[in-house]
Length: 174
Image (tube, rainbow, N blue to C red):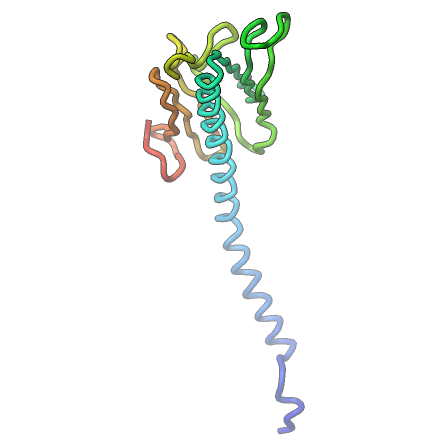
């Protein structure tokens, strides 16, 4: 046999290799989609928790009660100072942070239970505890998973999986 013809791959060998790679890739795609969904939900829920922790810290640091409002339909939330308080001029609220849920594709918010309303503050600046009647939770969902961000009356903020539904790994059940 001539040494010149013995090196390399034949077209048949190359086609078989490409077909095997295609089959393996098609088996891996669904697990990657599930992983992406979980990561999007985790990013959203960790972001909400982080913003609420930031809000609590800023409330204590500024000696000023901050407020938060949720819009579950679009799942936006706004952290703000009320008009006429804490250096905010009268007539309009001063937004410190506005988060749009549109940046988290496929994630929805349901049941923001009593976390706040437009007239009550979430954290009291004296102790960092939650003002009376404002503890609660916000539930974030993807198509397959559901998780809550829970705020206790002491001001502790945590993430937990909803009992009886698929949750994210690493969090305890509510």
